[in-house]
Amino acid sequence: MASEDKNGAGALPVVDLAPFLTTGDEDGTTAVREACREYGFFRVVNHGVPPQLMARALELSAAFFALPDEEKAKVRPVEGSEAPLPAGYARQPAHSADKNEYLLAFDPQLGFNRYPSEPSGFEGGFLELSDVHLLLLLLIREELEECYVKLTKLGVLIQILNECMGLQPGFLKEYNSDRSFDFMALLRYFPAMADENNGISEHQDGNCITFVLQDSVGGLEVFKDGAWVPADPVEGTIVVNLGDVIQVLTNNKMKSAMHRVVRMPEAHRHSLAFFFNVHGDRWVEPLPEFTEKIGEAPRYRKFLYREYQQLRMRNKTHPPSRPEDVVHITHYAICITKRMAIDPSNVDPHFLRRLLSSTEVFPEG
Ligand SMILES: O=C(O)CCC(=O)C(=O)O
Image (cartoon, rainbow, N blue to C red; front, side, top):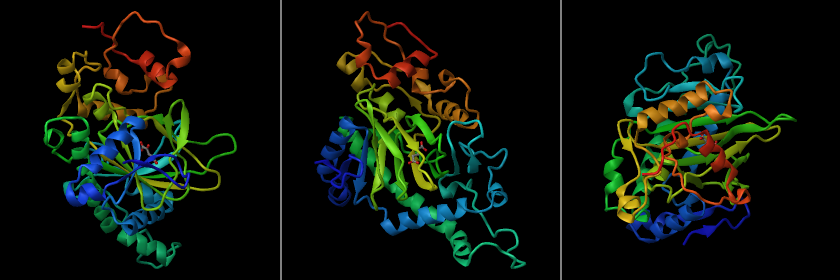
């Protein structure tokens, strides 16, 4: 069973993966199904990623972001790289509502990743950095790559989801067998200002499932039943949320969870998000199990994952000035026009806003 957090630290359901990871036990499936129905967000324990490794990855990330800007600039993405998204360091544009900086990394075997090397001045011994800081930098590649490998393994959750969705055994594993579009983002959020505290605006992730590691600062929030619920840090646990691909495949039976990050006063927050994706050449559309086989109309037209991922990245690198120009999954929504009485007080305002900003509207049938 999915249990609730007992310490009041963010009321996310907690799923113990030990039974599933050790024996392939059904319990994992039941707990995930309950958690997905409730929130689309849950916390996993006994997930196979050693807590010490998680802590070190976050420390190293903090050490990286604490480097002077000119050092971070040395690992900016390489122009013309064939990485699915720009691998390396970036900072949100000044006019973006989001106030954070990040480092994107792909599967280490693909050779796209950029890591800091010796800071300038190393040879001359004129470093302003502490020895601890230097040591962390020398370890960063190895530790982050180990973390990447472990988080990729946690992608086994896709098999639990397959079961929860009632699909043919092995369907999602086969559909989603290529790992070259997965990526990991190290994030640093700046301290809140007196009058402004947005870290990442409310959004749903565009991928399949996301795994989030966070330091002790807090600020991640999940939208549920019309309110923002904190997903506070709990040491050693990983927060998991469903993304748009699962929402589309299930024709909205499972929801891509709405979330945001609020910045805290006087503290930088560090997190590490691993985005378990599908390959860019995959077509994504509602599966027959959630449409024709149950007599329901598809709520999305089919799209190539690569296209959606690029559009989403553009939201980040070139944030549109009008909120209605930000691309969400509603970009592919088929608007089912039925005459119905809507009580505005019962409509989720986020859903309504996205629906109205959808650029493609199709009549039913
Ligand atoms: O920093 C976090 O906790 C979440 C990050 C996130 O939502 C994102 O990168 O899409």
